Length: 400
Image 1 (spheres, rainbow, N blue to C red):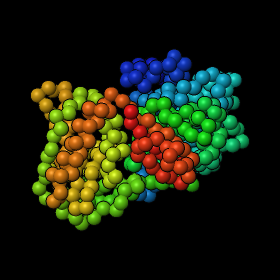
Image 2 (image 1 turned 90 degrees about the vertical axis):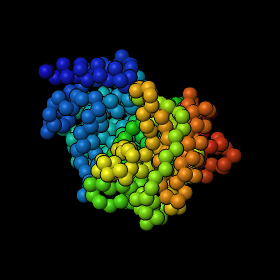
Image 3 (image 1 turned 90 degrees about the horizontal axis):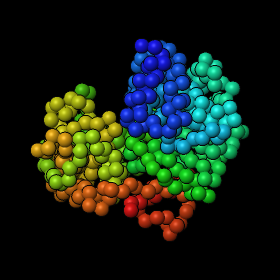
Image 4 (image 1 turned 60 degrees about the vertical axis):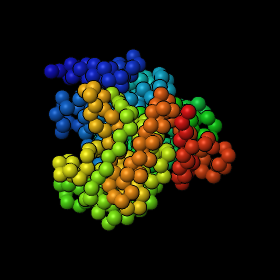
């Protein structure tokens, strides 16, 4: 299959997924030869809609840099609503995304792409001349926490690394009414959020489920992993993000003890995402880290399910309960429930069921509203809901 045929097939997949919607974004994805950015990878693989190419990991195996999957890149670009002639800053480089952006903004626009890692910006410097976009893209090696002030202001800023906060530079360098698209981690859950600047605050205009490599530099703030079961092939742990340290010995004992189940009578279609439910649970519960487990743990029966993004898990002292699903009589639907372990398992599983039912009755047809305010903003200026205090900002999640 030729390069163009591979691109056309990829575009068809992305349109079918709903990731590509705008004609000018479709045209960019049909044109940019993304495979030139990763010559070590089979060309056909680089055009698979969900395939991300990991380009760098640290000594512990944490992914530090990647060329995001085409679906993720398309999703963020559509969120940004980029138009010809705009000035766009990309934080987290590599070249491919910058080429898409350059194609969209055209010769009257400007794209600035920045990354803290010189190996990453060097890769962009090799890729962009091959594709003919080097004259429309400025490549900056530096800490994305500070943006790229020499070329500001920007109509759009797209962040392609997971962030736990919104640094002042990203707001200051964005025009009022401009859009910031950022994979924002909120209590362990990452969503790529489209924000609109309204003076000193940022107001959400939609978000999508995503996964990105973590930010490095001054803005680095990674989740912590606490292991509850440490046999390598069966490892089970909790990812903590602003959550208190758990009693690992007590939870280890609970995990190996009997389990209880509670079911909600709330069902989802097989292809229906749980992302909004999970964000609701993170909003209402104080201590809801994410349970991660290797497939061997499920095979042994330690946990009922595994997910690369983690499963919301309510923790209370010596007990835990995690969100679960089971089949129904309708093969296209699944029932939501909770599986608990420990002395208080039934009580906390029932609490999770109660919130699943509240979400179903009151919030299922709505989406969360997210606002970002400067640190120090008084409580009476924030919407009522879950507030997360970060070094630079106060992030408020509310529900209609």
